Image (cartoon, rainbow, N blue to C red):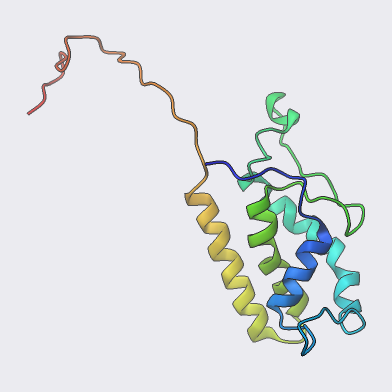
Amino acid sequence: MAYQTTGSITGMDVFQRAITIMDELSDEGKYKYEDTEEYRLRTLAILNVLQQELYPFSDTYRKNSEWESGRRPVAAQLEDLYSEIDLDDYCAGTVLPYGLAAHLLMAEDPSSANFCQQRYDELKASLQRGMPAESEDITDLYGGLEPYNEFGMWA
């Protein structure tokens, strides 16, 4: 199963999800931009680093033309927070906000930052285990009669 590719999640979307995870919403559930301005200013640089870390696990990685030429593909850098992130929607919308929240909280709330980092690492590990793969037919290189060949038989 392939995830929807890049095109719908922006840096601002990830920032807003991270702010929600960090519990920085007002009592009415609204974003308090005046209270989160320092976080917003740091977000672009952090996202540009984290998306490179997640890029090899994204569906967009092997679709990059660099892959075909034998060169290591890299995600496109974000120019601003309204740029689309060069990751599939699962990586950008589910994994990346935890990494961003961890980095934003690191100095002021280490225990919350640790929780977010652990969750980010768990989600990233699940990406490593569950990368969608294509199937292909297996060719019998040894020949022989089905279901037997010269190396053994079915019990």
